[in-house]
Amino acid sequence: MRIDSQQLHRVSLSAEDGRYNELGFADRSSRASDETGPMAVREPDDKALIVDGSAAGGQSTAWKTVEFVVPADLRAEEATSKPPDGAYAWMVIAACFVSLMLSIGINDAFGVYQQEYQLNEFPEASASLISWIGTIQFLVMCIGGVFSGFLCEHFDTRVLNAIGAVIMGAAFIAGSFCKSVELLMVTQGLLYGLGASFPFVAGTAIPSQWFIKRQGLATGIALSGSGIGGMWMTSATSALIRTLGRPWAMRVTGIIAMVAVLLVSPWMRVRLVPHRSERIVDWALVKDRRFCLFLAALVFAIAAYFGPFYQVPSYSVVVLHKSETWGSNMDTLMNGLSVVGRLSVGMLADMVGPLNLLVANTALAALSLLVLWVPFDSVGTLLAVDLLFGFAIGGIVSVIPVVAAQVFGLARLPSIIGLLFISYFVGGLLGVPPMSALLDNVGHRTDYTSSIWYMAMLPVCSLLFLVAMRFTVTRKWRARV
Image (tube, rainbow, N blue to C red; front, side, top):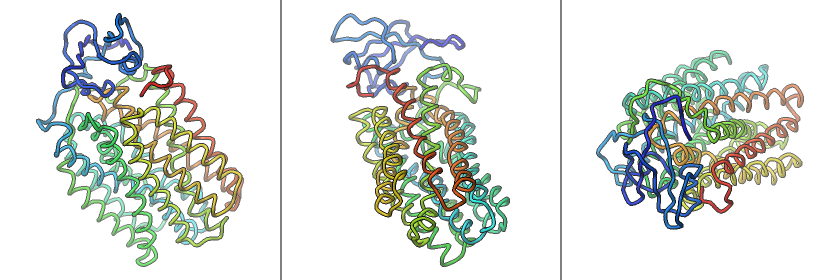
């Protein structure tokens, strides 16, 4: 990949050295230098293709020679003397786990608030209008993530994480006093999303920097925090609303989120930083065909992500005639399976390849909705959808940063993840709002068929872009990418 718009350096990499993964090439380790010359990697041919995406040269079967040109500002500097793969690295993973557990877990639990607002507090408001509270929350997290990624490269991530914790807590406490959907959009939606964008970006990007040998597993453990958070936050929120009422449920949630994230902020630090760049967006990435395909795939994957979480609770009550508690428990089950998916796929990513697993899990998500939820309206099939979709979507979320690290590099991973959040933003717009509008205008708030069909086609579109990306990286079926 040649980039003409920047100062370029030709790097010489040796697989026998010890710092290869700082630039994020595959899963080997060697030192990057400013020496002019080719890069030699003692790997089979398909692994060399993984490193660059396009081989240039190579004369023997024992050595594969590849010329690779990288932007100067992608060369990494160590931000700390702490080594990767050590005890401190696991402390960082624990901190990321807690930060994601609260920041994303609260967002995942919005289905319970949607149910409360729609059925009890604002019965006259449309489902589409109410869904915008959670949608704004997620969209602001994503668009804020672009700037948060840039800030994480220029300022102390520990301080940024702490600032985010305070804003998150204040947003929910302020939201507890709101008596209209519009004010909740500002507090529970916009303000909370702004605060959560800091732990969201940091917790997603940092884990891959701290591990070389178990990168997929460590990232999967950290990102499983969001699934575990969604699981217990869903049940806890439902219980708090039943016993204390919605206002006090929000106050308790805000205080817990603020205190917990503040306590782990001292360990939320990056290990690598690039040479300083004043650009918020690295436009060189946009010229990379692999990145564009990845971005498009994530738009549809994220659009599909929140649909079942938001609509299953009310679907359970309206269509299956179950209790509100049963409906919220279905969200809890889905979050629980997403944790299993995050951990399982995280472990397998180091053996099978993260991009391969991303393709497989997206296919599973599409099948669970198309084959089970579209044609059937029964408790058994909804349980099956919960199990399969929960597992698949958890696996998708856990390998996104690992794919980004291995294909595009570790040095500017926070800003790369931030840039990927543009796809999250667009996906958020294409996801729940159209689904809710279909439910209101086509299904008249009782028939979910059109909404489910729309939901099911989103992972299908994502799968098409991922397959194209997979064959752009390498056309070899058995390559571990």
